[in-house]
Length: 170
Length: 84
Image (tube, rainbow over the protein chains, first blue to last red):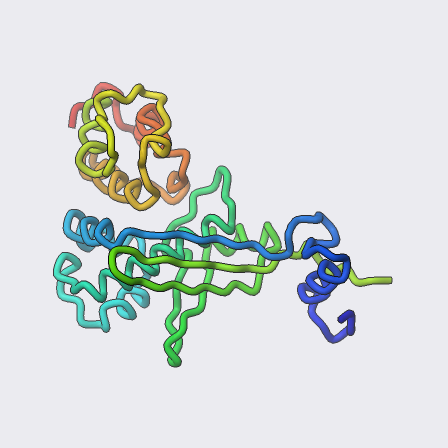
């Protein structure tokens, strides 16, 4: 588990697990950082109705909007239920990510947290700007996200790995 | 300004209780404000006061109370006596 070919992150994870607790060997925080969120889909529909394009532009990237709407959006208020649920799921990912980032005095613009749909259908997470800087400052990497929606709500879970650094066993 | 903030909260905050009963420093999140509803509140405040919240103010503490919202608006140049 401490093969020199492993990355510092995996070394830290391995060290934590070997020690009996998944903790960073430097700061002793958990190596795994988790965020979760649940979002009422009707609230997103109401925001689209009340604030239309401004809501979309302030919260989502153009790629996220296209992925949710199939690129066929006419007006925000006219989006169908499936697109609205998809946006709610993406919003939940953003909030889950903010919970994992744990900003205290820093504002995180929502488009800095981007859900990227992959050709296979699953999604990955890309951080930009303030979100990326916060992740770097907290030594968070290897982000993974998942969201789902059904009925009235969308839910999301985000996981990242934390390690304070390049510590290897002597 | 406070009356306008209360009106925005009433119409956009999706709070379960009476906005008029909130004190200026009452915690809006404890009163039921969700993170998503705070987005609606922010957009409605921008409309009401003709301002735009910069990235630096897009944090939970900006919307944690009526007083905090008023302070944020004042930092954007809104006159505390403004009645939008």
